[in-house]
Amino acid sequence: MKKLDELKEWRRTHYSIEITPELDGKRVTVFGWLASIREQGGITFLILHDKEGAVQITMHKDKIPRSVLEKVKNIREHSSIGIRGIVKSIDKAPHGAEIIPEEMCILGIAQRQPPFSLFGGKMASIDKRLDIRVLDLRRPKAQAIFRIRHTVLKSIREFLIKKGYIEVSTPKIIATATEGGAALFPILYYDKEAFLAQSPQLYKEQLVIPFEKVFEIGPIFRAEESRTLRHLSEIVSIDVEEAFVSYEDIMRLIEQMIYHTVKEVRERCSSEMEFLGHELPVPKVPFKNFTYKDVLEILEKEGTTVNWGDDLSTQSLKVLGKIIPEFYFITDWPTFMKPFYIKPKGDKQDICESFDFMHGSIELASGGSRVSSKRLLVKRLKEQGLEPKLFRYHLRVFDYGMPPHAGFGLGLERLMMVLTWQENIREVTIFPRDRSRLTP
Ligand code: ATP
Ligand code: MG
Image 1 (cartoon, rainbow, N blue to C red):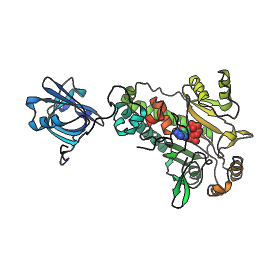
Image 2 (tube, rainbow, N blue to C red):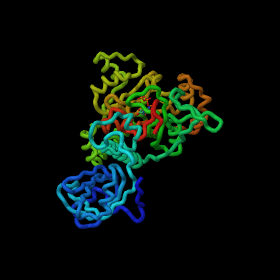
Image 3 (spheres, helix red, strand yellow):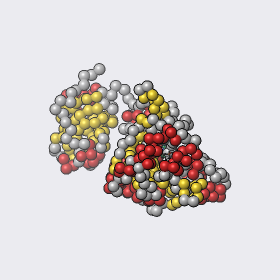
């Protein structure tokens, strides 16, 4: 194996996209990964990729120091290198300039070539790509997706903070199920059984007492038995809870938050969007609103019968998605279909103040007004077959002036699927976890 160079005093002066004609004649140092080596009529062209893009390194055999030529002879694509050289303005190169190298250091040798093509060619299967995900993430489309994700998270944080919500973090190791046990991962906590949190629901509700308006962006865990294109076992949930408001206020908040986020992505990620090859339209607000009952009627007209109280199957969601291919809400679900903490609606106790926030056939968020009376909460727990005793630490909080409150939980990955037109949730997750994948 060739000996590697040391970083020593080598430091980057510019990223690839900063190598422009204005720097003509200047000495620069760049770092990155060698994307290609090409020889043409006694000239060797290297394309170097860094996190910002690509830069061309051009070597005329007779004008380049021997030491550099020797290194180029031995190097392989995907090695990480540093180049120090002089910028030369030239129309044909990316960004109108290239680098004529004076020195080169080889910092990380690619011992083997990736098992699939990173730049163009046929896309390898998702499983093959996920097996060595960091290489897959160098694909320009993956880079675009995760830069958009970064912008989405930043925009949502900025939006909520500006609106006066405080960011909190709640435990992910918990003693009791939030909503009943089905989808929980049990873990060994010292000598006791504990669980990974499936939602920050109960904690965020409690936190409206000291903080009134809270949000959390953090992982949640669901033991989903079936492998689908929109379920993972670990996701990032964007949770909001607020005192003295109802589900209608929260729906307006989601509307503004999504509007703001899409606007930011359009402004800050135009090149990434262009790269993904789709236009991201500014959402029309207010979003349409259908009650659960409306939805059953719409589906019935389409020849898809869903009985009152049945979940909307993947098939019926598909039908709905074709009819409403945009952001919308489904409200006023049957009470027994929603968790115990959702507030029944006025005198119509069989439906509740709940909503699902949708885009086409995809559920993005669920939310609602919460039960704030301890007596009703105990009753609802029992109705859902849950043991109030297990919830005593939650219930006792309700003795201290629990205000009316409402909120939602939104899956970041689902939102990313919609914003980047991905059909498989794994494409928008850096290291996805599902029934059959626990590595890398
Ligand atoms: P679904 O019906 O799609 O399985 P859910 O109604 O069980 O979702 P909620 O408990 O309402 O999910 O969770 C709130 C949000 O968290 C969902 O709307 C969704 O965006 C996201 N979410 C929940 N579970 C998963 C999962 N396993 N994978 C990806 N996202 C999820
Ligand atoms: Mg839901």
